[in-house]
Amino acid sequence: MNECISIFDMLKIGVGPSSSHTLGPWRGAERLLNELREEGLFGKVNRIKIDLYGSLSLTGKGHATDLAIMLGLSGADPEYIPVEDIDGIIENINTNNQLKLGNEKSISFTPKTDIIFNKEFLPFHSNGFSFTAYTDNSEYVSTFYSIGGGFVTKEDNSADEKEKGDLKCNFPFPIDKADDLLQYVRSENKKISEIVYANEKSIRSEEEIHNELMRVWNTMLECMHIGCHTEGVLPGGLNVRRRAYDMHQKLIGDLPYNSPQEWLQVIRKTEVKFRQILKWVSCFALSVNEVNAALGRVVTAPTNGSAGVIPSVLMYYMVIENHNANEEHIKQFLLVAGEIGSIFKKGATISAAMGGCQAEIGVSSAMAAGALCEVMGGTPEQCLVASEIAMEHHLGLTCDPVAGLVQVPCIERNTMGAIKAINAAELALETDPKNVKVPLDKVVNTMWETAKDMDNKYKETSEGGLAVAVNLPNC
Image (cartoon, rainbow, N blue to C red; front, side):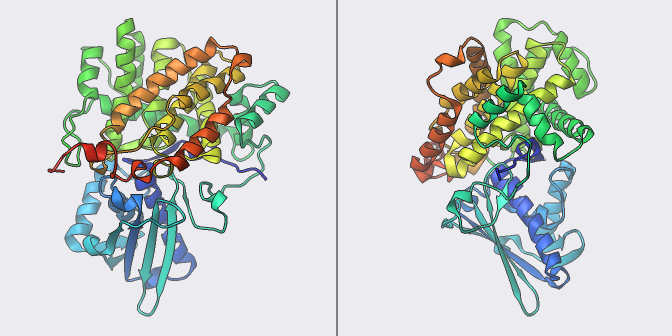
């Protein structure tokens, strides 16, 4: 049976700044609560200790891993928690040294001593974290691994499975590789989005698919709107000034609107000159990742660190390429993007701690390129060419966040990934796939081999690259 990954596994709604360092540990904490209930231990627990390992330890503070775990243990859901409530929950825990486990019972919890940052790496995966739950007469230990994109798994006996979750099902069109996808679109005479839609219909209703896709898009749109209308300095100590606000003000001027939806329509009606196109795309990408860096709500696509690429490219399509784009175009775009992302997850990785930033910005750029190509009329073969071009020119990209924060160079990299995606789609539309020398599956394989060859210090550890070249003593 092939591995089944829904597009909603690739496009998750959550809180920033990192899918692997924030959303994953948050989900791990939620899973621990379920385990404690299943074992009949929840009511007996009086203390919990957390050990963070490897990349989670080395960049955990900058990625808010400790905060995410506290929020998860408190019973908060990253999809729905009002982000304005986060500071209050954390402050209450720090002040009282008490945590309301599962929002049901208070236990003793001192973050400074109960969350331990261990620099050593566990052998199974770079992002390991372990919970020890104490009762009056026993200990319960549970270890998880955050494998990128908010996916969390436990260790098993197969090293080949460490980049794969436990999601298995019987899709009518099981897809592990790009070649599988090509076979189906040719034999069924369908678009990529139609094949993906058929798979999704095997596990949920058409109404649910529609509602969830639109919820994903509306979250993206709201995130861009918030980022474009919020000024100031990002948290974390780097004192990075938000740029989307100023850029947006210069681009849109004094045009009136009262909601994200009205804002979208206003931009569509704005006469955009050629030189402004790059500025608009960059503004959209910056806005998302500034929200992400401030622990705002974003769509993991496929990770939080690369959350700005797909919405900015989809926004480009709607405000530059096709002013008549509707919900069907949005759904089509997201279906293709999600499937391309799943191919990279199955064949390589979407974890920067395993593959560097090529696994985040590179994959998101490939997702956006393939999706844009289809809505612009490209054939399935051209869509995969677009994804291949986008990833090919991100191969070897390192992950070296300054001060362990998802800010420098992460925010700007989303603008680069978005622009490359648009360029890749345009090139693919002018390409005869028969003349392409490098198929997408070869690029996926090459990305994984490159990831394995890459020095570990360039894999989200803050021990190489810009993270050590930039001297910031006050952070």
